[in-house]
Amino acid sequence: MTTKPRARKFRVRRTEPAAPARSPDAPATGVQRDDARPLPPDADRSEETPDPATAPHDAPTAVQEIAAIRDEGLSARQLRLARRVAQQHDLPATSDLDAVRLLRQRGIDPFQHANMLELIVPKGGGEPHESGAPDAFSGVPAPTDHQKRDLTRPVPGKIDLPSTGFSPAERRNREIGQIQRDIMLRRRRRLMLLLARLAFFVALPTFIAGWYFYRVATPMYAANSEFLILQADNVGGSGLGGLLSGTQFATSQDSIAVQSYLQSKDAMLRLDRDVGFKSHFSQDWIDPIQRLSDTPTNEEAYKLYSKNVKIGYDPTEGVIRMEVSAADPEVSADFSTRLISYAEERVNDMSQQKRGDQMEDALQGFEEAQAQRRNAQEALVQLQQEGAILDPEGVIAGLRAQINNVELQLQDRELQLAALLDNPVPNEAKVSGAEGDVRRLRELLARLNERMVDASKGENSLAQLTVRIQMAQADLATRDMMLQSALQQVEQTRMEANRQVRYLTTSVEPVPSQDPAYPRKFENTILAFLIFAGIYLMISLTASILREQVTA
Image (cartoon, rainbow, N blue to C red):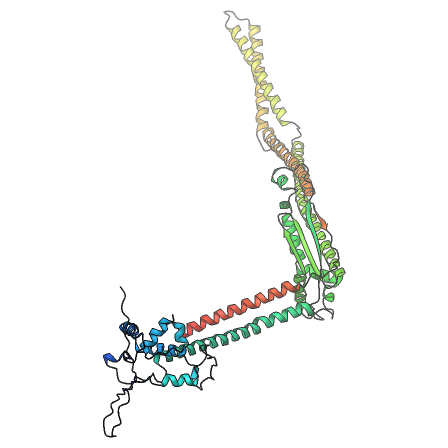
């Protein structure tokens, strides 16, 4: 379902056909409506149907087409635009509705946006263009003076054309165009300001940096070298030490220690004492940025040393890579050779210190074990000398054997005496002899028991002396075992110390370079551009955020 466009009402100045002459006091027959007053409902058509008497030979068809166009409900503004387009195409239109009809017969849409833009007058409404000159705003030829007079000339017997004043739509188009030009100018101005800021904060510093790298910077020659720290062959090694021997993990700590030493201030001071590191970089022909002062401090020299001496350790291969830069290729190679010799001395010192500490502890333990065994043996000999008996245990064992033998003889004699006494008429001589043997055996047993008791009593008894001798012998056996263990520890420590020996092997010798390695002109210039651009971007974003926060 389509809706019929609603006719818009505009204030139009209409002039009726001239009436016969009348006196000044007579009322005017032509009606002229003020633009400030609204039109009546029947005033939204700017033209009436042409008179059939004055219509051409195809008047019936034209009247029907005009009636159909009137029924479309076109607004007065659309009809005026159609009249102006018809005049631009030199069509003999007798009214606005007839202009729409003729344009449609020509295949021209009078209400197309392109046709409407052709009717916009230049900015400012100044002096008219020359006849046929193109309009600066729309790009179409401007109307001539004759065409402008035709725009204001009334059609015979009909109403006048619209006045030369701009309609609200035309004024709106003019204002839109002005706004677009202002926006375009503002964008151009902002673009120029952006380019100026970029040129000042990015391009100019980048140009200065590039100029320094290409024209001012002193070329530096680099001497590259590679060396690694190896461990002695682990002959007969076992356990975790045997598994790690011969790999980079066995010497990683030593490699890291050597790297730290070469990057330290101590190495820089030693290099300065030997070959004059400070004096080389204090020469006048070196650029001011890389040149040291005449009397530089150790901190200034160490800062330059850290920049020109680069050392890296690769844990996967166990290789230490060193790059030494100097203003002269021979000097850079000399610096690199000196530093390698310092590293070799440091490796030897660390190995010697480690071996010395291990052997010192092992030998000290062995000497203590020897002294303790000697003391134990001397104590045993002294105990044996104090008792005048070399073997107290043997004496006590002999007494016990004699006592046992006497007890057996006594029991035998007592049995013989009991057998003689059991006879009804015992032999007195035999009985007396048996009783004497029993008595003598008992006396001998008593004496032996007394000797045994005397040997077990007192501080110097055989029992006490035996106990002391046994303890001394046990102590001597323990000291023998400790001495044997200490001796074994000394041997193992000696073998381990031999395995702890480190060797520094130079795989790549430093060679003087023919071409300078620094500065890298193009790379450094690009890096400077990226740095300045990043700083500018960060500052601009921060300023934009702060401005938005303040104005919010």
